[in-house]
Image (cartoon, rainbow, N blue to C red; front, side, top):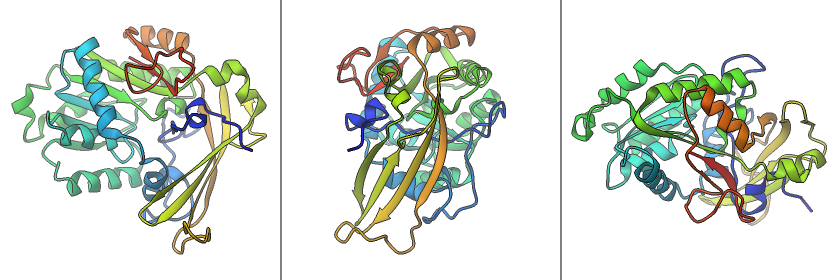
Length: 324
């Protein structure tokens, strides 16, 4: 039996970190390799096709609707513009742009394979006029470049000027877990704050700290799930018994693995290689985020236990930690 290492996973909703750390104090948040994006070995963050199989089951249009409602309740009153940090395949940017409101979006990532896949997705969905994909480090954001990218979108003028910044910035799917160094976390939040319009909001999705307080991380159990898409099944291992957790830094070094198999036979599918790697993730608490936000010129206005208004942060059914 596999015990849930992450509360969200044990309750059926995975929160997965996008991108990785280039090393302690590196100032660059990316895990990048030269593996083919068509499916193969190496890092999960260098294999968008496997990544999408493993984590693409989430309701991205529904999550974008939640972001819109957060902007209405806590922010500028609308989400005409979205800045998606650590965007990976740009799921939220494209979902926002494809919605009826046709929000324009800028998706930022620092992984070449993910950037390629994001641009492919934007083109496939016919959204090149409303979504820009930009290479960038989330710990050293070039806010001027981001606004320029948004301003060059053909329909940006129809939705108001971006000169004052974005209505919403988001760092979702646990990407913030790779901000291992406090200075990097502050820099990321400062960059986002500088990119926001007056009254704009930043939304973070993090691993729920219940596992930290319940001792699950110290017990170093793991979690596993599977997803069947397009005639193949991907088996995901997220954490393994014995993975180390550092109580002084709140960093867990997780062993993660991905295998693509035939749904009927369970045999490996030709053309896919198993992926196994170690991913270092920092587990944040709500008071830590509150302090980091203050240091970055932001203030916490709300917290939720899932990407909806129905689940309080302290609810037993809370999947993740959403901080606005």
